[in-house]
Amino acid sequence: MRKNANAFKIICYFLFCGTVGSLTTACSMPLKKLGNGTSTSDPATQLVFYTSLPSTANSGALFSTQPYVLIEDASGKISTTANNTVTLVAYTNSTCTATASGTFTEDSLQASSGVAIFTTVTYNGPAGTIYVGATASGLTTACSGAITIGTGSAYQTAFSTQPSTTETSGSVLSTQPVVEVEDSGGNLISSASNSITLKVFSNSSCTTAATGTLSATANPVSASSGSATFAGVTYTGPVGTIYLGATSNGLVTGCSKAIAVSAGSAYQLAFSTEPSTTNVTGSVFSTQPVVEVEDSGGNLISSASNSITLGAFSNSNCTTSISGLTETTNPLSASSGKAAFTGVTYSGPTGTIYIGATASGLVKACSSAITIDSGPAYQLVFSTAPSTAVNSGQTFGIQPIVAVEDSGGNLDSSATNSITLGAYTDSNCTTLASGNLSATTNPVSASSGHANFAGVTYIGKTGTIYIGATSTGLVTACSSAVTVYPGSPYQLGFSTEPSQSAISGTAFGTQPVVEVED
Image 1 (cartoon, rainbow, N blue to C red):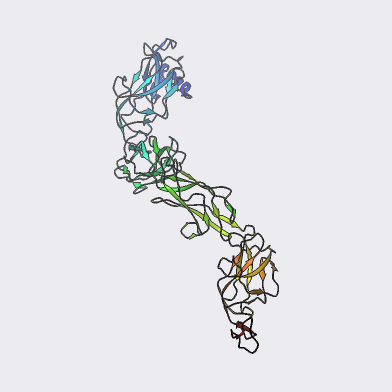
Image 2 (cartoon, rainbow, N blue to C red):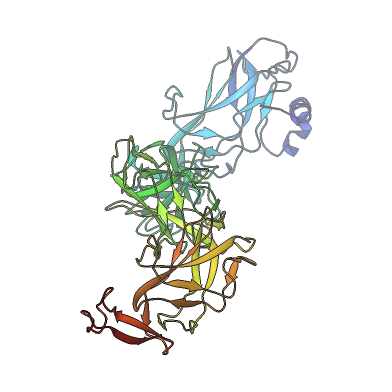
């Protein structure tokens, strides 16, 4: 409600025109006179429209003639002492008893000296016929003549067909929305062809964007005959309540009714708990991964019991697998939609890896990048293996180099362990061979994690041997098979010994055989 700022001047004008007859013709329009012109303080009883309101108006547009409402006594005189609040109401009948659905922009004004002068009256409501009633508490209502309301200009969007009020995340809405372009009174603008875009919001006024994704066969859609019919509208996102907003440049956004979103069917895996982002090779991850089964909107499927397998990968898409990942149980069946892994360990080269979770029929989950650092000294390996063939008594053509590594095969560059070479008869290097393995220095202390041997020679029987590298507390390294061939002639040996007793002058019962040996 606003106070009538011009009322005093207008009333003075009424009095002036009504009391000086010679000036009546100077008035711009016929004015009511104050009865006998001698009393203005009788009790007010009724309201009267001084101006005739227009017979036509468009919804949302200013009335071409604005209402001037007079407060009168029973004899029809203006009650100049009245300051009642005058309210405008739209009605559907000529007696102003049946209220219309529309509203006025300026609907309440406090009179001054018995006059209420409205200046910004606009009707927002359906097209058709209305009557304007001027009301005030305790006074008889003034009712205007019929006013035909026409369609106004495009002002807002509205859902002529509301979308479904319940939806499963990732599924097409069972009822697809239809949006129309309206004037401020809610009348369809049948000529409108505005481009209309659907968006998803978290509040009923469609001002706060929701998370998740809204898709449709086409979005935006251009209105045809004032309406935009959408198809394939699907929301993929968290469970809860959302609202669809229909936006169009220059128009007020229409907001749908609330839509309750529930979880969809199992679609993908996700890490609800990511594994540690750094780890020492060969050590159990400090943070063990938990994998959950989700729908396409990321909602937990609490009924899922899928079998889930973890693996190590070299790329962020988890498409290139690598070895070295172990777990207490793998695969592991989900319980209440989740699989909580234990004992996850990676033993492999330093660098960056990713852990992938897979289950039949579901989209794979891939963890964040994990940096693998080297661990403590664990094993010996031949970084340079010895020759695979050698003559007995001759120096190996390729001299072995032994490295100290962690369990993932990473060089321990700080290692200075004392490393000893030996000859063995088996590929596990557990049974020593009968020959003699010698070297310039044996054992050799590692330097920067490597022990470089020189002068390694094996003197022994022909056949196959294995070179083993040992160091206290570390896993033994065992070479590939080494074939031993005869060496250069070096000595004589009895391959058949003569008899150990004989009679003088008599031939030995067992005659000796002598061979040339290396």
